[in-house]
Length: 245
Image (cartoon, rainbow, N blue to C red; front, side, top):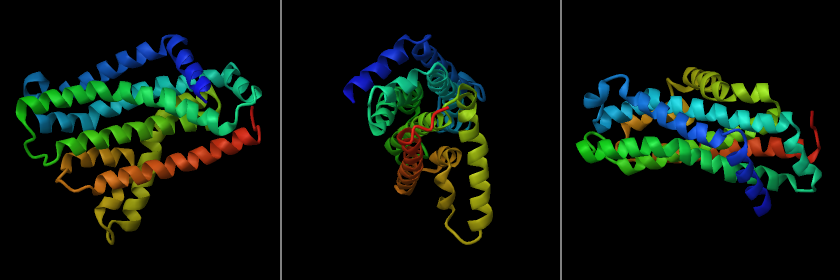
């Protein structure tokens, strides 16, 4: 699997500048955190976190996620990804190699500019109403890993450039909205509202209400594992049965 990881990293670095465009997109998208209130008034930890949760980080995930999924889709359209199976590599190694290499690197690229911005605002203004700032950074990174891994797995499942191009919008927009509305209608009158934390958008929104408990982290971890496990199984079955287009 180490050779597969090295191959993925080499391809990601040398295929049309995806790596550098992703870095640029992450930096520019993070800058949208200043759009609502301006630099002076936004450089406040709670306001900056609010802007990140509501606008900036969604832009980061969409812009970088689109580049990531297009990269995966292109590898299927030019049949490059099929050579890995033809070379006799087990499906689980191929899946893990993609997620652990370009998935992790993409998550770091998305996360670092925003983390630097939040750290700088925290140093300047303090934690203010946020009781556990460290938990905010941990949850934000878990959300990012979950998102990049799921983008990759959905792209591997779709195995098509056009499908891959729309995955970030479907995953963060349509799917999240539908799931959120269904759960809200079913459980809002009877259950703890933390049940609504299972979508990425609601997880980002609830970062603003951190009061020192770990429930949000547990829910983020559980939803991440469940979604990625289901996708992993589906992709594995496609590769195992060689259901290629």
